[in-house]
Length: 184
Image (cartoon, rainbow, N blue to C red):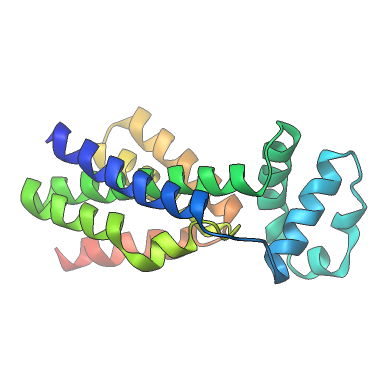
């Protein structure tokens, strides 16, 4: 099982990194606004967060803070894209890991590798959207909760909470899990 999970992770990471490193990409629209706000914050200017955009879409502030941290540590658009590639690869690995629990190793490998090579996910990698990190955290949270035990459930809940800070969709994840449990 370990070599198959590593293979899923490696394929996903390779494809996403290749696209981030060789495709021309620049943030536009909301992604540019978020990136510019993050740059301002990294320079010590918090005024962007008082703009109408953040007044209307306040849930974007934690993601802009994340981008600001990366920028403050010396990163930029490419670094954020590389991190997106990592989050995508971890997501593919988590899909494999969760599926292995319910469907066996072969089906889990198929699920993980299909996400690893899914063109939509690969092409979205350089886009500075909050979806990469939130999906990774949601899947990690589900995996940890699925392992059972108080410690794993607490860690899983923390991952869901962090994912929800990046993109407030944890309620949908939880409702999906509840719906699936009723179908069993």
